[in-house]
Image (tube, rainbow, N blue to C red; front, side, top):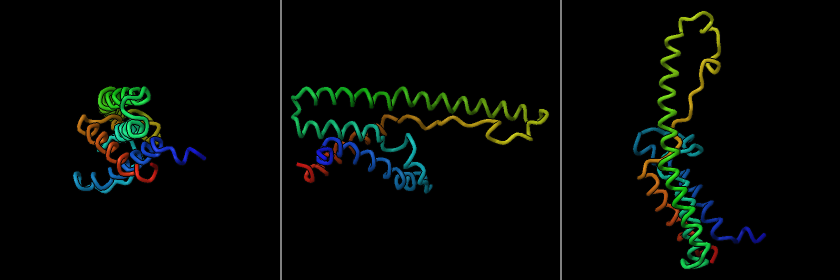
Length: 158
């Protein structure tokens, strides 16, 4: 049962949960749209990936010290994860948006084709998920969130 006292593990999990659920009020304030499904989806402000890895790295730094090898490993892991969240995954989301637009154009073109309207919507097309990655500002605030969560929950573990 030592896992329940593992501060770095719980710091990372807490940061993920906090970052995911804070997206709901942020979207309500910014877009004036109440959407609970964003709490269970990828993308959005703040980045839960960034929050998780920075909370983990911060907690490891607190427990093991910032000169430890495990802190260095976690730090590099965090940088790679945040780069991926803002780079590769974001580009994949932009590609998905373009592909979805092309699919809709093709659907409009073929709407008049024989038997097309008899098919179920899902058979016609299924949109690709476009909100995959993060804007750099979302990654930044995810990182700030993770660091803050690690320091906030530290007293319960150490």
